[in-house]
Image (cartoon, rainbow, N blue to C red; front, side, top):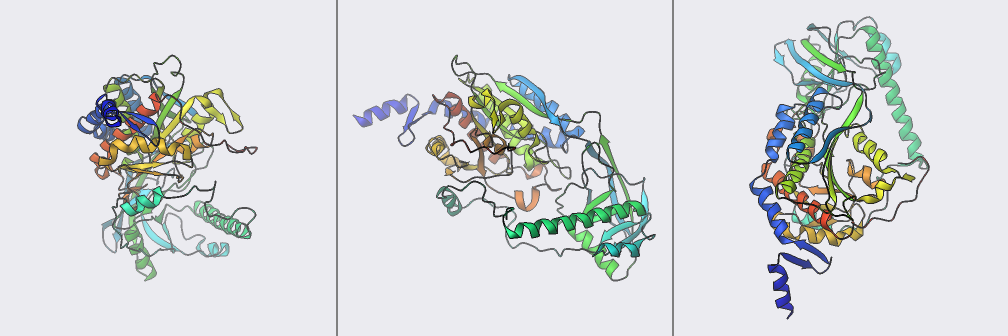
Length: 522
């Protein structure tokens, strides 16, 4: 009798998972798999976000170009309310218009060097001696007075390169996934850093203040002395340069000197020559541009409206950050996640899905500067932890993707144990695609935290690391060719299925116990 009943349910397109008591619509899952794996457009989307739009630094024309394209593309899928929604003031936009630098003495060699974000231009094409500056204390600055005007400066702070014995590209092993699955709940916080009550905290903050004071004095001195260009050693090896921010993007910030972040190999060569007393000359032409006409930041928003009279006001949200750094085209960070989320929406619309709950996609800006886009959106729509709005109670879940091109291997519960059995059942149809792991663990550093902070169930998927942390994250190597097509197809298919299940589920997903509020927290 039991076997007959189970067989009837399966042939009707529904399987029951006893532990979670969750129904899986097998017919819908198969439609999602067919469209996502065999008719994908995810690489076309990634191409437009990277090769066509170029770098998508916060506030830049490249970001705005990509945002406008994405909003129109989502509209073309048949989604509604597709728009660029402002989240608040960001600051100055910035882009690189020209970047050339080369050693000319003792021989010609074009170097790998990238302007630090929001730094200024050189005064046209320059050609100058390179000066090695060694400053241990503020009093050391006086010996360089009158010697740096028009010069190219490098600091005598070279860091030797260390080649890793581990492969650049890696996927999770079964043992690593088992360890994640067997993890225990983590306490809130727990980052391992000393807090204000720890004696180490005062020492840490004093050291930081000293470093900042030295850096500020050095920058002011070089400004006053009329330095033409600064070279600094970028993190990375084998021609990879992990870029950073070189100046403030605030509209009131004063201009910073032009500065190039140089590959470790090129920087160390220059330092070795100068330490040996060899003359080094360089030529450079660095032209950057600031944009101040519109200081606001924007997110891309679009919806697939709900159809159930009772549930259509409830929302399932998905998203990823849309902005990137400027050395590459932000393929793995995070055109990959953005393209997957757009593709998930396309899949659901293409299969004719009419969800009970409204599904909303959000492509955030200025995540790289501090989750600004998602935090601004959450504050405007859902409130803050100690002053929540009514809309907060209507969001069933937010799903995020922002850890490179690697395939989805499971999901972090972010401490929400009650969701574990549900997600396990939802992953069952994707065992053959390598997605099985549910971990109670938290993960940080991206936009799901903005939702988790106001007790909306916010989740980041577990992804294979690939070469994200070793080669592409914020680097000049973060380009389209680093994307893995099959992984992105798999990810979009799984996201679409999770969204389908969340939208159709009888109840909203369970929430964690609301954290105690503290004045001034968000």
